[in-house]
Length: 224
Image (cartoon, rainbow, N blue to C red; front, side, top):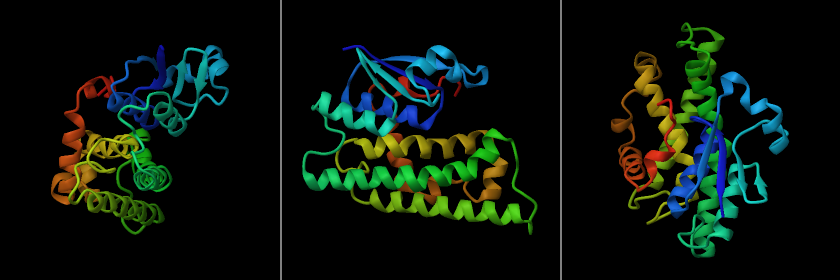
């Protein structure tokens, strides 16, 4: 089966799928779209995915247009190295992390880093409504990071002893924080999040663990 992942470099949802494929040791092709050129809105891509979003996964005659749905499909299509655990309890725990990350961590990341990394805005002037909103967003992000930090006490991965869908969904978000530290260090200091390793040592070790897995390098954003 030939699997092609259509995505934009650095897009967290596309990265989830690449990590899921990597955790399971499945070969794949990547078609990188350039969002700046509107390639995700081009007619040939819209024929695959009328919403013009990423990722889109083509596996022979099957077309999948959702990252979580793709991770679930991978587990049914390729049962070895399960992404959602081997027992009902493991599956429930992993799905809970997946949905909490999808609903809360993703939102917090977007609220904090869209202005900083996409719009190029620095921390708003103190005392303004924008500063209050940014501070609240940072607090929500720190809360989500601390939940993951606690979850990693005593286990190497978010789902237990092996990399799972929980790690595939959370890793791109945490790695995006590191990207902001690397490229916007002074702003991240103002955000109080420049010293990630000191704030969240379990997450730092987990991030290194994921980065050391075979095939990981191929998943990293090309422009990074």
